[in-house]
Image (cartoon, rainbow, N blue to C red; front, side):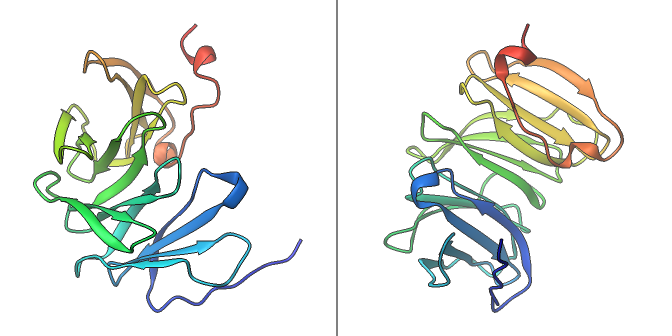
Amino acid sequence: MSTSVLQLPCQVYCSRFGPNRAQQLVGFGGKDGAVYVYPFEDYSRAARLEGDASPLTALAFDPQQHRVVGGSDSGGVRLWDVTTEQSVRSFDAGHKSTVTGADYHRYTDFIATCSRDKSLRIWDTRKKTCLQSYKGATAPLCATQFSPNGRWAASGCAKGVIRLYDLVSGKQLNEFRAHEGLSHLYIFILSSIIWR
């Protein structure tokens, strides 16, 4: 196993692998507000996606790796086209603080973002609108993820609480208390096991 080192022109605040394993990409975001996209097996940069001046703190690829969503320290959310390297949409009227997590829905044009402002938001990238906003958290949110079947979204907060939401009804389904600070990163393994 070999190790590869890439030198980016700024401090890196977030990174994410693309979901397409046949031609996997990896993205990095940082202090300069841009997203740097590289093929996983290569050093040649695939794209540099220009953001605003605010540091990029969260990112996610769409299932086909054609688009990247990024959240910033200012609370803004932006969507880019990887091929054209152009901004497609911006969702500025949303979070009031640093975006700490982002995920792209597997089957639709929805994205989820969470923030230090304690809110989880579900966005429709086609309409540039916030479909749902969840504000029940009592501490800053650290992570968000859609379930593999696309029916639910989860958020994790700094107090170790994971909340699960039904995307159809828009209601909170469940709440789990993890250990303090352990909800920064989690993953749906088998959604059928969670819901039995």
